Length: 120
Image 1 (cartoon, helix red, strand yellow):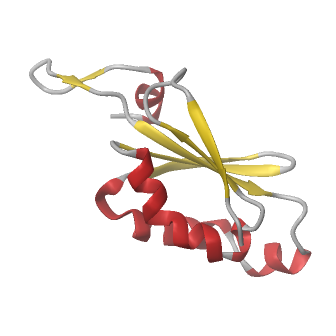
Image 2 (cartoon, rainbow, N blue to C red; image 1 turned 90 degrees about the vertical axis):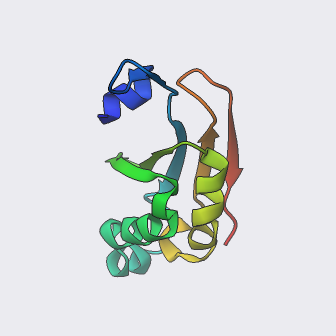
């Protein structure tokens, strides 16, 4: 299943069985307000590797988007709350996650979302 299909709607598995849309976790990292030393010492690939290890079989990282003031990391899986709890410790302790926010989407695009600000 490709990333665009997961985002925009229904998927059919082999045999035509319906596969429910993936839930999502969006992690927004501050890209400009942290001390310069943090951006120099800690890289996004290492941070994403830690997230992948913590996620295990609960979901997957499907890329990121780097903007002028922030970076959004996209995680998809069957249970957004479980994914959040799996990566919560990293979000609360990793230097790159200072002032980060997490948006949980429990269904397809258009589903109500709720945001959690990470405290560290």
